Image (cartoon, rainbow, N blue to C red; front, side, top):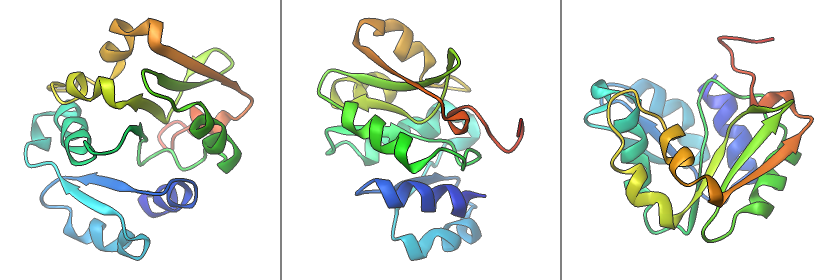
Length: 153
């Protein structure tokens, strides 16, 4: 699943970061052919927020990052291209399918500081809420932005 998701994103994005727990070496070897930057979230056991923070810190030199979930390999390449076109300084970019927020969610560098402060099981939802005026939403007919392998339909 991770490999399929990573392949999808590697085909659309110039740089791929894969955030993993320190004991995920076998999983890291699966994605090696894609030449991603592997980020080990040393404190991943403290929740998703710490994994997100580790990934953002590793990508700090980039002007914009998209956060994707490994269990969501169904997003269409054309949707990823549309999201990339919306990426701009000062923006948070998020797809919507039938009014439901999806992934990947993109953040301009201005929001990296807030993202690196995430803790526990806190995802980026609170950062989006606090900066809702910066939110650019892509209404899409792509169900892949909300579909994950845990909830396939």
